[in-house]
Length: 121
Image (cartoon, rainbow, N blue to C red; front, side, top):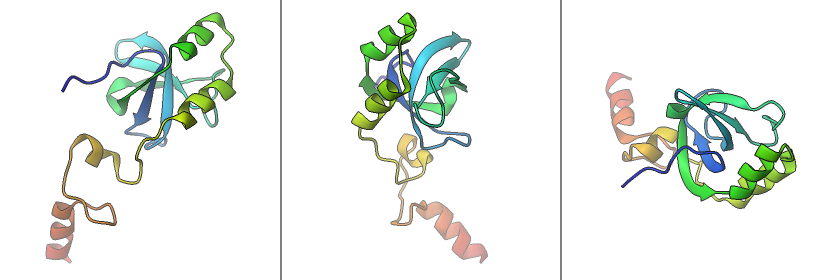
């Protein structure tokens, strides 16, 4: 399956860093594997986060309106929040299990790690 492109207007899920598990919107492509992202809450449109694309998981959700408003300089934090809140992404399990499906128990721990923990105490 072909992955979704990391393009402005795309909703993404952070896989790494302090914001792991947070839904974000890509505002612009900074080149060389970096994008500017915001969520409208902690990371505002006025000061977007520079994030490596390898630390993001692209989703199928896209908004051309976000791109148009950002390029025109009229994008509000409320617009980004509305877009982010309108999408439903599962975040109850660790991010690694979403990209690399593993057998996970109800506590969100993969069975291989649980077996290793049990073997070594």
